[in-house]
Image (cartoon, rainbow over all chains, first blue to last red; front, top):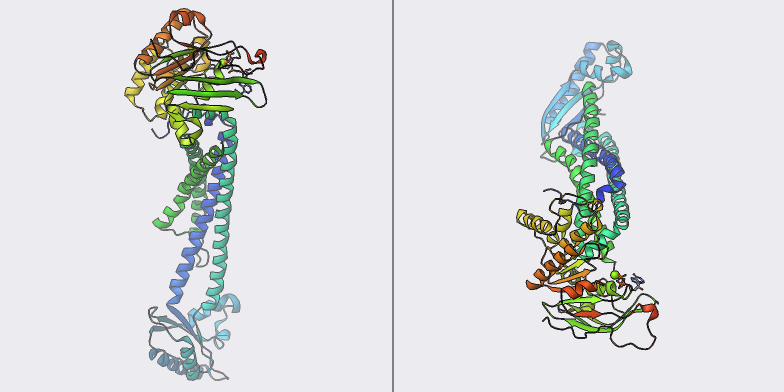
Length: 300
Length: 235
Ligand SMILES: Nc1ncnc2c1ncn2[C@@H]1O[C@H](COP(=O)(O)OP(=O)(O)OP(=O)(O)O)[C@@H](O)[C@H]1O
Ligand SMILES: [Mg+2]
């Protein structure tokens, strides 16, 4: 029997009607907060993993006016110099030039699609794959490249990644704060409801004491009661939250974008999310139990 | 089994309900305690169930001084005492069966064997077809028998019954007394508070008489109110 028939008629309390809803709401909030935390975390990790292995080298276009084919030759020269430097750098696995087409497309939103006009101002871009295992001396590389071709820039994306990660961390912090607040509010509610319940059922509790019930026997009934209402409310709130997450995930799939976070959670993450339910029940049970034991302990 | 030494009891600043009461109940004995309404019978039983501390004197129950018992030891002692309350104190939301099972749950004995035992006892006290009834739907006499069944089911070392035949007819009263005597034969020490002189006549056991109602008690230091100090051994 999961629940022994209780000696204290706790299921007649008024709290039975509102506690599950309150718990449902809290579990809903907590589940969403935890999910967003995990999504952001996995996003940060993906950015980090992707970008740690990559550098962008930007070679400015040659100065001065010259016929296009001469300019093209100059560009190629500069490109070769840079490629030589990169090839001589330990830790560099591969350097690939982004075609002018691709670079043009990258800037198209800002500069328009008038290729011929714009082309002359476009830098050459190299995507450089580096061995994440080796620590690349970035300032030294920057110096060497600048010496080879003046104005060449190495970008390891740290700057904008840093900003993004800071943003992500604050989102995570917010989620943690929500989780903490929800847990505290939940515990406070259980303490309050349990206290009221102890007062209401004082005659029955007194009788149980007179018949030789230990405090833990009585606490057990409150604990089981807390498990019942937190499980009922928790499942409801958890189901609602999973529904909302599913809707967001679906909407996210519809938008092809590298920036909008996809909701991609592994089994482990889902296990963590599901643990909200477990944690809620545990919290409610332990809180109820402690409240009862502490209160009864103060009766002489 | 139970020993009171110079026990006095008053509630707050009120008059003394019990004054310099001394007696002891030997293991396996059977006693009545009588006295007018308000004489302190219920109060005396409350002292023995450790629900009330004496204002003066010492109360020892099951070989342990009540003042020395901590919370856990007190609970342990109470589990060895069966108590029939004057006002029954049944759990109104639980069936008769569950009410009587309660002491067994408290001592950690449950299961089909125990339930069978409970059913048997309930049919013996004439409640065989009220097993699933809720106490508030029963008559006073029926509730009283549930309370008695609950008090004896765990074969306590000590049975305290407060006016256990107050709500039943003579035939059932006799039957209940047989039950108590049977339990007593099996080793339980019995103390019954009653003012049913008829019963005391019919089932002979030593009687502890408490003085007249406290309001009319003489102010002079009264002798021990029990007429049989140092409780007699059973005949
Ligand atoms: N909790 C209490 N607080 C204050 N006074 C009490 C309390 N309980 C009992 N009394 C008083 O103590 C006296 C004895 O009461 P008690 O219930 O022990 O009598 P009793 O012999 O059981 O009477 P009855 O035969 O009517 O049951 C009464 O005067 C009563 O008013
Ligand atoms: Mg009484």
